[in-house]
Image 1 (cartoon, one colour):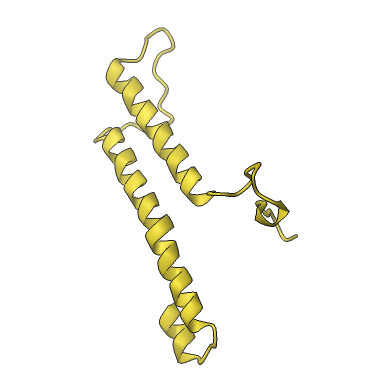
Image 2 (tube, helix red, strand yellow; image 1 turned 180 degrees about the horizontal axis):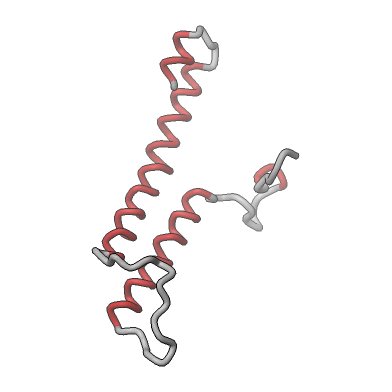
Amino acid sequence: MASDIKSGGNPNAAETETDINKLVAETLDKIIDVAKTVNEAIGNVNAPIGNIPDQSTTGTAAEEASVKFLSEGIGNIVNVVLKDVESADNGTDKRLKMGGG
């Protein structure tokens, strides 16, 4: 992507390349690390995530730990992606924008 911008003679090429590298280093790498953690928590379970057991049975400790790791991992991904967005400390310029306007 950055090489396409450079070859097009874009005056913002260096800044864009820096921003792309920052995105990869700070955001995508963290998401990948968290996804690996979630994958380890899931292990080699072959049942679908929506596979609900009989309501009269209780979960085992291993199942409870896996669910905890899974929810924490998803929470960490959300925190990485939405870092500094919709925080009470931010001004209106950092608000999450939805849709076209």
